[in-house]
Image (cartoon, rainbow, N blue to C red; front, side):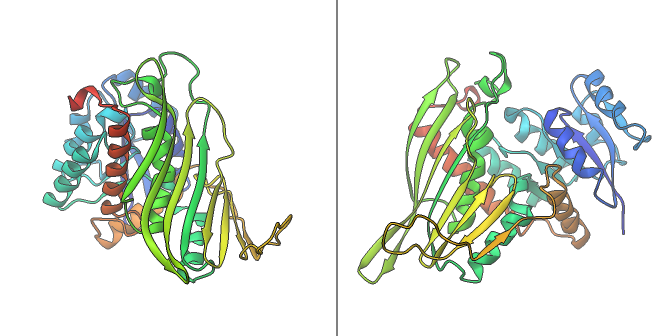
Length: 347
């Protein structure tokens, strides 16, 4: 099997996590890191030089894009730079994994998708949660009809990310805020569960003095479903914050049972329950509990899936198709429109 040489565009905290996954994945090596500050790229490479002695530091993305010794690129620079960076590498025929948020908005996402297709190159959103064993188990339970038709989902997702006024998540110029940094996770999961983007959404937002959203609540309506007495809404609800820690749990309610996911974004565990009794129930016994052998905090599952696409010549990942990525971006655009939150690049 071919050994793929990866380049990192934007060596930072998230790239460090990606490297943890890269190092335990067969047939892939770190070949380079690029930054506008070559010293930063070199500092990143130096941490891994004993394992990857041939890895190179680049002082620009263009320099790495031109290097034939780079087979694929992971993009993890600031949110507002994702689109331009991805377009550069795609035009140089480099397969790309692009971090979340995929772009600032749906228009940018469409540009990236069109560019990948025009150049016949693999492009994938780095939505690592989709590839985790717990997520795949939940998907299989639903496909097997274990909870009947999924009707509702509820998730909270919060992390105390802000530790200083200049933190990147507070930067309006760089596309900061709770929605693009964390809200993408539950929205992507909901869209996966219910088969597409919502047809309507209602939301509430709390903003920082910089103009970005610090927290928000959103209710998404997907479609109508029929039952014995008429119709019912298929809905999802989430509350998201970048200034406080939350339980990060998700509950999926179906016609014939429910699923609870602990730390849904990181896939800690999933529990399958029977339908609730039509009375107050103090305790329900689980039908099945799934705990993975390890919680993958190194992104190795998404890397293996990306490599599988390369080995098969696929230009799109069936687990994280580009249509799903675009649906998520459109949903986030709709929420930001409700909040009158328009980034400078969109003026």
